Image (cartoon, rainbow, N blue to C red):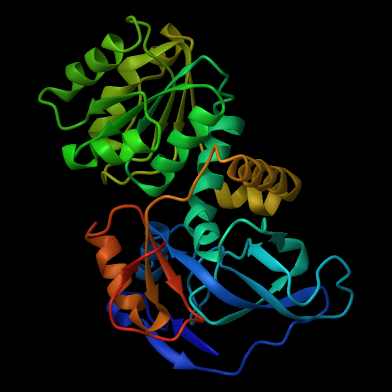
Length: 340
């Protein structure tokens, strides 16, 4: 098989593209030909050695690849050769093949392409757990999504609308306004406005009859968290998902008490390990809403596996709107192309 290895932590340029023997599925495992895998910001952190959970060197990065089962190991009863699956693999996706436990595979709907499955995978399950499990959002509530133009942000907008919420999209770049509105946002909050500490709350109050946001999903941290916490409605819930802005914020707990608010965190990979049944329910919901046309894959740009370094550079430099997906089993070509 062909695969991209991390043999030492560093930039995307340090990835080593190699040909190695195909893995052999052991008992309870299946061999999957990988058709698509998303490039995620977390992959950059893993490759650089800056993530809290790091595989032992050398390793193949890439989470949640999708593909076709091409052989099954002993004791596998629920999957067959030819099944199209979304895997829950935490690594190994930047390759043409992967051996994965059958219990970590979920059959894809016939109407969902491999590229769509990969583009939705990690982003949509993160958004679902933030919205439904951590925030316990309810129809009729208002949600503010910080970093709304990213993969998780766009997924949260769609899921929020599918479940009957009013959604405000927080963006720093006005060029992203059309993207978040197309995803279904009811309004936009300008995160680049002057005096953000005051202006963010005012923008939210102006769009909520001065109530504030019942739910806030925060992928950014830093000054954005500091400002958004002042826009929480009484008994509101804030879910911390990441710190893309760089600084990990702190919070005075008396403010939590005064607003009767909740602040929680989400590390979605823990749910894959600790609550697999709930993870399967999450994907059943995502697939149901997709088939009902209440969800759709975000704008996607595809790359062959041999262009993985360029794909990750473009991801790091935010040169592509929407999602980046690698197509490991396709014949390599030079130019990236938007997915149909």
